[in-house]
Image (cartoon, rainbow, N blue to C red):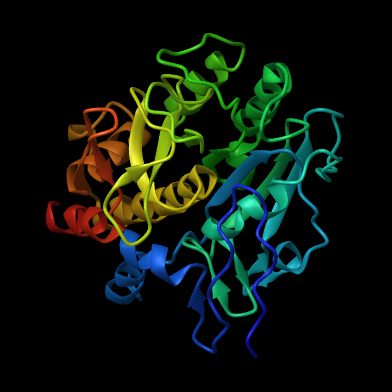
Length: 318
């Protein structure tokens, strides 16, 4: 049975796929441009699309009662952990004005009603770490506490990836030192991918915090149907990903990093030639295999994520 598309939340791509027995991509047009569906087809039976890995989603809270997060995988619950670093408990439920965290994980992780996110077999941990995703005040202390929770729990849940969703919507041309930096460095040394959205204001002279930080990958956007940069981008934008909002770009990047991680492991790819840590190496692979984009708005050159090319590169260069 086809599922009606839900209302679009600000900053989140609406679900466009219709359910089918075989499973349909969360957003067919964008998955095609990222070449996710090509990767699913070629490496079916070789890769498991996030199985066994856990994605930690750090945002403004999540309603765990929605069907997508109550879903069961063939081997267990989709959501295997939750934390609230604001209140110090395991209830991540958002409190107004929070709204964003319930839906931001669907592009990367949905496995429900025939709709599939990029890494649809992954586990998810939902962490409420800010009161609202578009930061109106300094909430770095609770963000740092949430990152510390990931550090302490990553082995227990096999957390390999962090979607650090909050953003301050400012134009930062350089990193902004805050209390989250030590945790970001620790996570990089633990080989955990951490990325954040650059922002959605079409700024060409700076990007949001924490995407601008040195141990957090800044994810920008390209226009669906075009290989053209849009939304916020500048120095510190590490990768462009097709989406209408960079929160979705970042969600897609997180899911793709889980697939690339498994490809590197399965192929026994010698990743240390590409970077000092596994996340650094994965970003380097995405950059060297991605479509080159010259952006007239900034005068800079970026790379657009191409999952198929990245995974092919890994399996063809062992």
